Length: 209
Image (cartoon, rainbow, N blue to C red; front, top):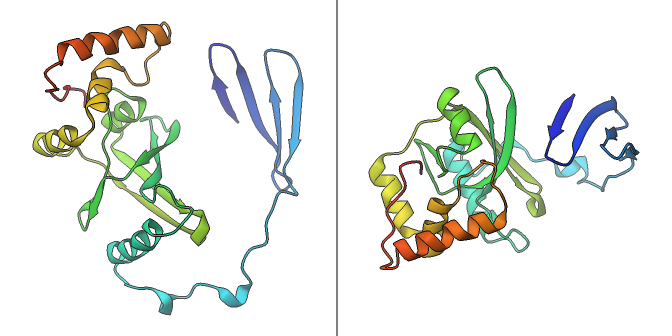
């Protein structure tokens, strides 16, 4: 059972029937929602077209990822081949997942950047392990990665932060990621304040980034 809570809505999502994939939700309005997705399917490739080991470009995992990533980057219909789902968890095992962008990879691992004060940043600080999933639907290919997570160097973070557009740099100062705000206007006020502060175009990387 998963409980999703917001200021306006509380949903209790239950898997009622495992094979029929029936979702039942109870909302504050008191109305019951019952959505059966059992018949939602598409035709997949015939088993004669099964991907086999001899079709690998490289038997070394990072080399194989590089080959597939290059194909995905050139495939129409894949707007961001570097988009991936990042799964983290608290020390007690409560998971969370969100899409982020891959910003580099090598035989040492896969690199992404985030605000250390965000939910994912806090969870990685107390439980430094994560899972990544790439899903390139037009290619019918997916890649799963699991491993330990460590911070990049300050020099690396500075270099990437400096490469970001000016508006994104200012936004990193104005937005307290994963924190509740009074409203959009309060965020816009902060943005204007930082725009004035950094009017010379030089924006330092915030300590939390």
